[in-house]
Picture 1 (cartoon, rainbow, N blue to C red):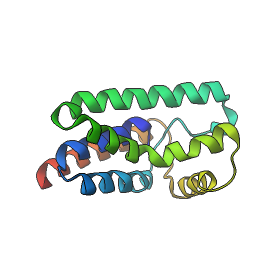
Picture 2: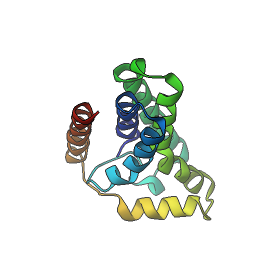
Picture 3: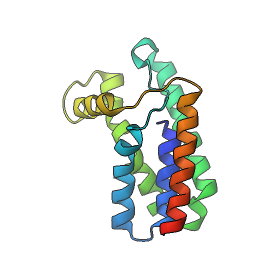
Picture 4: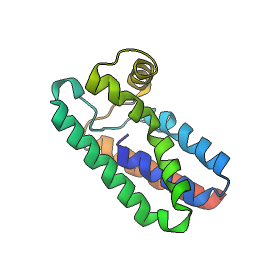
Length: 147
């Protein structure tokens, strides 16, 4: 999933689940579960991209996600809790950064990369974006119903 998708889910969890222990746990678990769903993201083809291009794409994706999540959900909960939920929802991707950019091929970076590569559902554009939109809307609605 894109970083925007993970940020939206983390933000939605923060605004819906008032118990931080549960909210942070759900946010952390959401990442690998969401990545099982066929999707497209900017990390596809990372070996063929320059590090500058990959960094810019990833940064813009993350920045857009945090801003959008804040506009939709961040105003309704504690800012630090909101940011913590987004951080842990993105953690698997953050752990891959040293693997991609610095060739750190040892745990936990290599572990995060290999797990993500194994579980990541792949879909081409535009279907890989449509699946993300559908899943995010479904999760947001489910959180509203259950919390």
